[in-house]
Each structure stands twice: as structure tokens, then as C-alpha cells.
Amino acid sequence: MALTGELAKVFQTINKKMGEDTVVLGSDITETGGRITTGSLALDVALGGGWPVNQWHEIIGEASNGKTAIALKTIASNQQRDPEFTTVWIAAEEWVAGYAEMCGVDTSRVYVVATNIMEEAYEAVIKITESKAVDCIVIDSLPALVPGAEDEKEMEEATVGRGALLTNKFFRKVGKASKRSLTKPERPF
Image (tube, rainbow, N blue to C red; front, side):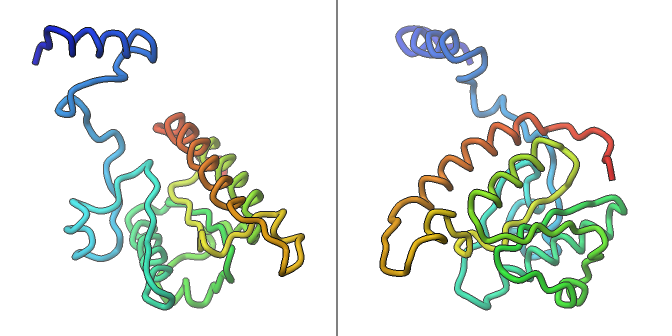
């Protein structure tokens, strides 16, 4: 659809200033990486074929409602489909290998980063994303991550907003790293 008039000028200005194809028609955008199964047919159908790859997804719910189980079933199902499917699990909460194995996960293909310090976890995820060497990164769980400054303070000392600021910055940085990671080189493992 060819645009004319004032809107076309605005879009041309935006594309000139921010880079070609900053503004495009929605129908011209195609999914770049496909989808991976969640391990649940019903959830795959609800999501239109599984999790879109190269995107961040958040599973939200009350405690003990199966969020970790969904992540583990996603890993297990994709490990069965691809013998080289590799995962990094950021364990802000306890990593339980027996539970993962019960869900069908080959734990020898899961690398665990055990930290609940927000800055450490986020830096690890950014570096791993930039490496393009893994298929899936799970943070279990975001609410369990604590800013380093808060971890060092006494209970009564307030550090309001630090976690939100760090998380905001993290998603901006990892978004850039994800865009650079659309194609994966050979795995170094």
C-alpha cells in the first residue's frame, strides 16, 4: 500500500532518522525463527504453534501452579526433538535435578547458573544470549532475584525501585543481544 500525503512524509522522516524499515506495514513483517513446542499440545495450540523463538516469554501465576513444570516440559520436549537442544537455567531458586529428570529433562544438557543476585543473573543471560550457543534460557524465577545493593542491606533499609530499574535495563540490553542472535553458529560444547 503506497502512502501519500502527510503520513508518508512522517514515515519517511522516521525511516531517515532511525534507519530504513523502522516503519513498515504489519503485513510485511514475517516471523524470523519459527516456534518450539511447549510440551503441551493444548498450550501449543493456544500459542499458535508453540513458543515463538528468539523472544522472551514470562509465565505468571501463583506459587506451586506449574510454572517451573511448564519450563521443564518445554525443555524435555525440545530435547527429544533435537539431540543438540541446549539450555541454560538461571537458578535464583533451587535447581532440583531429580524433578527436572522426572519431567523428562536430560540434565546433562542443562547448564545451571546458581545465583539470586539480579546483576549477576542478568549479566550471565546477556553474555549467553550474545554467544548464540544455546537454544533456551530460563530464569527461575524473576521475583526471586534480588539486587546486589538490597542483598547487602539490613532488613529495615529500603532500596525501593532498584530491581525494577535493573530489570528495565536488562530487557533493553538483552533485546539488542537477541536481535544479534537470530542465526546461531555451531555450538562450542
